[in-house]
Image (tube, rainbow, N blue to C red):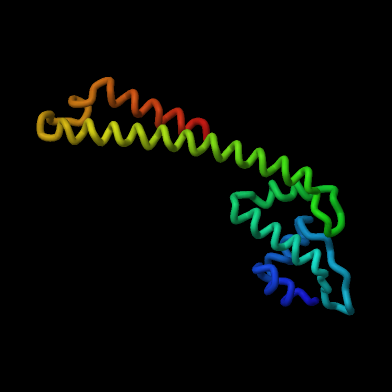
Length: 143
């Protein structure tokens, strides 16, 4: 099939397919005259790339998974390792965001409780506010 059909079936664009070829994510297809001819396996790889991107993988990460692996067959073991690493990173990020959310809730409660009693936010919060801000600063540093 030609590039337009491969793009349609995989949910990508012709431009994306050419880019993936240029950076080595997709092996160069056979040619029929001046036209690129794609296999069903090429479409499957394009769908893998698109799905992985939607799940948070960057093209650089996909290059690492697919590097030195010519042909249309995916390196399943590398993909499994990358998925496990991505899940762990995501779990860490979720935990950090949950701590920030808890800090924001406590901060909001303190502000509401003290509303109208103090002239400045720093006067009302004192050291308690700094504890919440420390959690937020640590979360931002770990990114």
